[in-house]
Image (cartoon, rainbow, N blue to C red; front, side, top):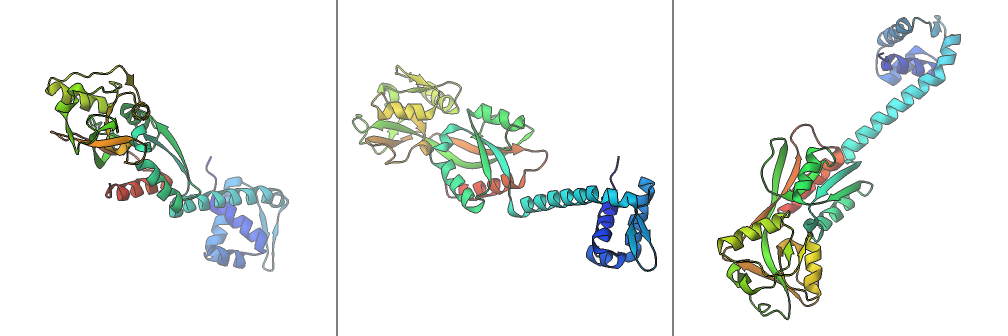
Length: 297
């Protein structure tokens, strides 16, 4: 069933303004075009809605009964269209973002603060998980956007590199290496490291570099999240190798971040979205803002 919205709108306008001339002016069409809309609607319904004479226009009994419903149709459609226009022009709405937890320490909060200042009525639903979970969420449609560590490319995903995030050595100020301006991977031979789950991209990078140098991890603890490793370091339980973006000097009393060199290993953080289809206005605004801010990282 195809609803003739133009005809319904014309009928409501004529009924409310009391004539074809005023209704045509309001709709910015000719009286001839307005007459054709009414005739088409009446032919579709096989009912007469208006009685028109040379002096006036009156609603038929059927027209009077139909008018309240017709008003609702026009109102609901107009409201829906205006809301969509508002969403498009002002980037209003809600969206879901999937993100690796390490980005929530410093990078993501700054972006969200800027976004909230520009779009205070918008709502973001955040799904935090490992990089492979972020990929799956975007591919499965659970999230419009994803922030993850660059890995194997997927043909259905478009990715934009946001920044390169070097791995760093995190330790207490009482650690023997705490005064070093930088440390090397060979220095990790005697470090009591807190291990990150083998499912995390950080662990994959770390294991690769250690294996190349024949270095084995020494540690009694393994955790799944960077924040947990950071808490253990702050509590004096070992040290850790973590992405530099996870920690800024001054975040934790007596905790130091030391550059890890020879070589410097950087993970690439990427912004993901589906190749097919477009983003909602709210997600598109976030996408553009994140790309702008990433240039400063």
